[in-house]
Each structure stands twice: as C-alpha cells, then as structure tokens.
Image 1 (tube, rainbow, N blue to C red):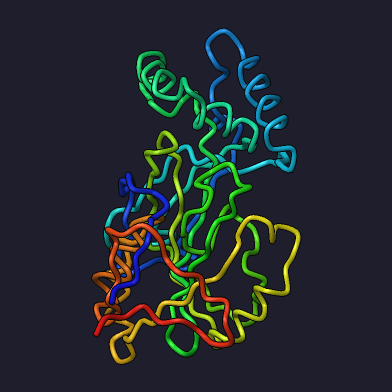
Image 2: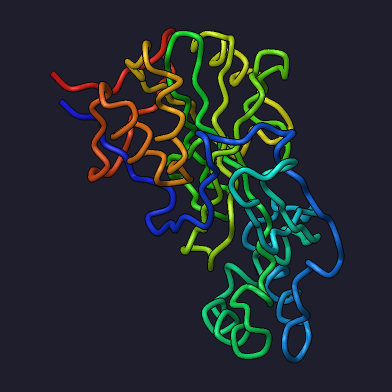
Length: 286
C-alpha cells in the first residue's frame, strides 16, 4: 500500500540554497525599500483592478492585504562575517498578486519585464511566501489540505505556510527558531518566490491536531491536517543539509522521499487521505 498525493507546485525552481544546512534569523538581513516595489504595468494598472473585481464576484470571501515583495536575495561570500543573506524587499498586495502573477497575461508581463527592465519579474507582484518543514515531538511531518475557497492551488496538499504570519495555531513557545533552508520559485504562479524553513515543534502530533482544530481567523484556508511519520530519529542534524533542497511542492518529493527515506511516499498518485481521527496517520508501505 502506498499513500498517494497530488502535490501543490509541480513546477518549482530553486532560486537560492542556504549554506550549512540552513541559516538562523541572525544570519539573515532584510532591506525594505520602495525601490524594490514592482513597476507599474505598461499602460497602467487598470487591468489589475478589473481582475480583482471579477475575482470578488466569483469568490466574495477573498480580501486584499499588504504583503512583502521579494525583489532579490544575495548570499555573502563564504567566510565573510555578519549576516550571510540579504533579502531586498518591497511592498505589494494580494490584489496585485492575483492581477499579475495569476493573470492570463503573466507570461507576457515576464517577457515585457525582461525587455523593458532586464528583469522578468519587474511587473509582477511576487509576494514572498513562506513554507515550513514542520516536525512534531513524536517525529511526524505536518501537511495541510488547502481549501477549495483559496485562489491559489485550491484542494491541494501543502506544507504549513502562506505569507509571513502565524499558521496552524501553534504557540510560538512550542516552536524552535526556524532555519531558512532556501528560496524557491513557483513557476505555476509566474515565478513567485517562497522562503522555505525547517522548524521543530515540542508538541506531539495529537497536540498539534488539537490546536489546528481549534480554528482561527484563516481556518477556511485549509480543510484538514495530515501527519506523515518521518521514521528518522538518530540523524536529524545530518538531515538539515539535505532539507535545504526542500520547497513548496518539492517538499513532498525531497523531504519525504529522500530525506525521510523510511516513509514510503508516492508522489505520482492523485490524492492523500486526510488525518481526522483520534491519532496521527502514517504513510507507509509493507
């Protein structure tokens, strides 16, 4: 028996891989400036407004909100002192994300950005997403089933994340300091970037499930929580370097398939059963 899955982002490229198995917070510096905002669209931004109004008619539960835009990221030379990674950030919004990265003209915008500015992302909102390889105290990886109500990747399985904000209702004191593994680009949304982290939780999978089921302001964004047994207990530090390749979508292949080799996880199949019973579920094969 295998546990099938339909992954969230089938086309993911690795923009940046952090050294040393991941970088802690003090090794990452952010530069926020309006010079890192997207460029106004050729001919004006009226098309973004029209797309947003159309979306709201079809999905009235959507709401606009400010987001950080990733302009670029630069690693420091090996052996240099101080922060090892510089993130250049601007500001954008969810509305602009749907009106650029997810618009029917996204491919044209990338071509035009390369022509006008030497940057395929110049006209795109590119809000910075986040994702986490989250492990519980009893050695389970946590995944979520995305709701059919969300605009991006509805109904698919993903790692916990979204944008820089609290997720899954877990108290911060139960979470280790996140290690930044790298940054991936989701090519299904015109190269939108997502920062990928490794986080350990001091709670068991059953405790995590109870926190998740307590709901919250954005509970509608997912419909179920899934636990996959890692079966890796003695080599967690050595796994960190391998986890640096993990990213949204690729987390299914890389983390569960290669890093957590004890969990037999099939990336080719179409659906993954939700874990909604009393205890955690295990994806394994005889």
